[in-house]
Each structure stands twice: as structure tokens, then as C-alpha cells.
Length: 252
Image 1: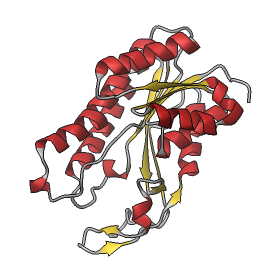
Image 2: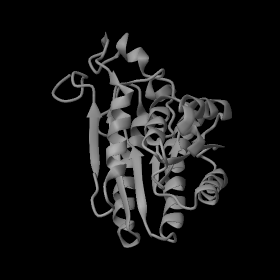
Image 3: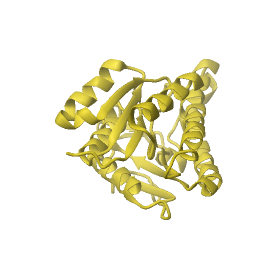
Image 4: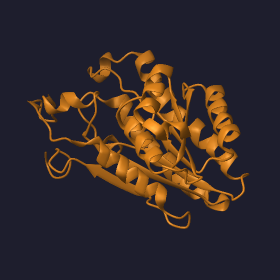
């Protein structure tokens, strides 16, 4: 498909939700800078895009390193001329151990990537978007259902995802003067390699182990693409997309 002359940066684009979103954006004609820690995984996503992969570049990036994030944005801007959309998707979890057994390093790793890494990307997006012509752009943060409610033994992940909501609100407010729109997509039980275990059984709040309903990851990609398609004077501030029958609303 021909380019639509819009450029997106997608973090965590080598697998799972990031990969699905990257493929959807490429299929829609976006030029895409794919970021992630593994060069081979990023190149695999580009290869899977087929002829649309000609509009993509792989930029190995550890989002917890602000220097690497600066390089990601400068590389995308140098290659494509501007940055219209950023999908902040990169994230990690910690082992599901009791809160009191979590190590300091495990805590810091999740905070460094899920929270600080997202801040670095938002900050660089502001720096690029406010100075380009036409000015502005859109930032979409991956919040997760965990931005609303925790799973058992998930303190680092849940804490960072709650914090992402605060970052989204601040970026939405502070971006107004630069024509930058910022929204958040909260995703529940998308079928990826990492989430596949949920269909087999995961701990519930009552201590039981139960399988959970799942949804296709392509539905998430379609939702993110919709958010990105809006004009900059319109914003989806928060979207929750989830498997209809997963235990989230109600009491289980």
C-alpha cells in the first residue's frame, strides 16, 4: 500500500501487541519506526509486513535508556521527516511472587521500563512534535486493565500502569499548546504469546486458578489505528478494549 505520508513510532514492536499494531499501521500506509530491544524480532515484524515493510525501519531501543530514546526519535525524524504518532507500548512484568518477596531489582526494572521509559518517549515526542511543520501529533499510551484493577501478586506492574494514567493526563493537558493529543488504550486479555497462559488458568482474587476469556490481538491493533486516525482536534482520552467475558467488571 502507498504511504499516507504519516509516520509512527511503535515501541515493543517485535512481538505481541506492538507487532500487531505495527503491521496494522504499515498496512494502512504509515511509515513506521519499529523499536524494541531485539533487532531480529523487529526485522521479523518488517518481513511479515511483506511489501509494506519497505516503509519501515528497525531501531533497536531500550526505552529505559534516555539516550537510546533520543536516538530512536532522531532516527525516525531523519528518515521520514516527521513523527505523527507514537504508540508507547513497551513494557515488562515481574515474577508473580508475594509482594514481600519481590526484590528491589525486580521492582526497579519494571518501573524503569514501564514508567520512566514511557516518560522518556513522551518527552522526546513533545520535543519533535512541537517544532515540526505542520505542528503537533498524537501519543497513544498502552495502559492495560491493570491501570484500573490489580491481579494477585502484581504490585510493580499495577503501580506503573496506574502511574501511566497520570502521565497520559499530564501529557494530554500539557500537549494542548503544541497541538499534541494524548490518549490511552487499556487492554485486557489480548491473545499474544505472553498472555496465552491466561486461557489455561491464572490466579484469581479469591485464590483460585481459572482460565480466562481472550480476544484476538488484531482487535487491539484496529482500535489503536482508529485512535490514530482522528484529526488532532479530536481525542479518545481513554479506551478500554477487553475480552467481553474476562473477569474485570462486576465481582469476578
